[in-house]
Image: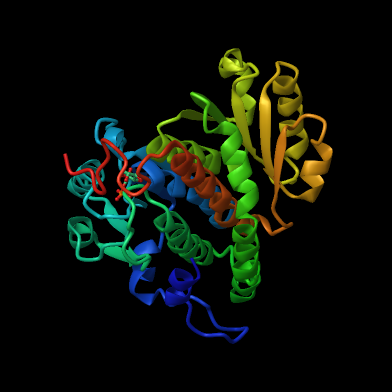
Length: 347
Ligand code: F1P
């Protein structure tokens, strides 16, 4: 994450922009709507970006899975741009979506890891994430590096919309100053995640829940668990549970909840109360305050430090990935080469 962010960071004076995006600034000018298109993990990174771009830059974002985008026939306005996210830069659906958007006259940005990929070659603007080679088939470090590039796009749009001064930019980015220490702290507690993994590794199903910016993380947690441990896992926005999925809840259903104790927490707490009363085994990833408030409803907790909201998608994702990793190793599946999956889905 830091390496990617630093790639885009230039000056350090208070009256200087931190970002060196001159080559793309003429293309982000006048954008009043953004479409983000991707598959899998890259799509969930795009979902985090939707929260950021809409709340920080004031630009509405349409988010679409690449496999559906070209069938939707969304009208294109000249003030919109399309952003394609792909670790490999070769995913067939994302590439087809990019070609479709270009044909419609859209300005196409891509955020890729592999810079000599087809998508990079065919985009108007390429933002590399510089994550290095992903060893496993399931995307892991690409997710956090994609978030860094997406934060750069967010700041660029906010600046051009007059919503962010250089001072604001410094303030926003200073929220990430101690990210290294936070991530190291998370990694040093991986034995707790291992214990949680032991308690769910024999389950056939798992539910993940999140609200606000934690929802894409719940989706990513469920995807990682499916991909590498073959446990059937689904993620729901916390408020959607009562609209159907709650019927699945019983004492054998682990529910993994991602919920930093922010202003949305009291609502999530009432969802926890609902599922706890149906015997669900709740595993809560939160901070000290959140874990204290939920202590009567949860079976296991994992504590993360208090952190600024901007840091949460990066830090909360790590224990989710570790959980999938430990469950998979306990079940004896191949974490790097899961069955039926390819590193880049080219058909
Ligand atoms: C997209 C993706 C990955 C997933 C799996 C299959 O790849 O869905 O997120 O983990 O490997 O492909 P990409 O377009 O980001 O390369």
